[in-house]
Image (cartoon, rainbow over the protein chains, first blue to last red):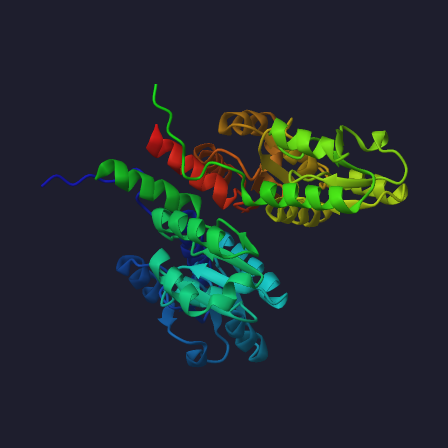
Length: 209
Length: 209
């Protein structure tokens, strides 16, 4: 078997930046933790642990006088609120492309828009996006899922609504979903929030296959 | 030669609605004009003329006591201002999908964003969109054009910017343009404003070819 390595393989901009910020924090703060593993890479997570930076799975686990690193996936507003209320200092390594989605869903959900999110609802990035929605947010992983949910909730189609995507969402599924949504939702704004690195990788994967 | 007629051939929703509104206006208003031909269809334009509704090419041509029909392509803010200042009543048949683009570019240009428009700058729809931009708006017809303009104006890439499309823009060119813009513009929000009817037609054209 021949293994081909894609040109676009490696850390994306957002993860690369978050890892650098975690190492900087490790050097500068006597007590630091990351909220969830900073990256899907055991070697780097181990190196951070050897510098005293372990990963915790929820804000409640954070001990006093500890600096928290928020990873590139981002977190929802309630986590920021918790950190502020408990005076926990934090370094925000949320990917700027994800932070942009947070701004968008916050603004439109405050205006009462329905928020449709093309993404995996169990993925931390989507949990963070949902955590910035002030009112109804709905995540779906496939166009078919959006279609079924819409059939069950026909009143959604006439509500002011926006459609955004998890930055790493599948492009073919996104195009199908946007096409369906344009046809059925009569008061919809579509934000294409899939990140460039994702598009490049998916295109290269098709070429390599 | 065999001529195949596409299933999606015919008036789109926005034009259909505008034509109905023009006929309603013809019946209800003694003096009415359309601002530009209501549709690219000489038979319908003739029928309207026989009902006393002719087409004028600029607001300055409108005589007193005349009702104006704004066609589906829409017009820029200065035209609305002119009509209001001169107390000219109007029926607004702007396609709701185009009106949505007007809202978007107005809001973001007021905040100082650079407005990138994928569209033909000589097309009335794009002229109308540009006419809602409070600050810098740039239209381009091909990804290559956007690329060249960006090379000449590298300072654009770090400005807050949005990308929108003429509702009838070519989908392949849109995807290429959005892909390029995501890579180069670091503070960009992309609105997919190509209308569903356009997508269906372009897809069917590919299948028929």
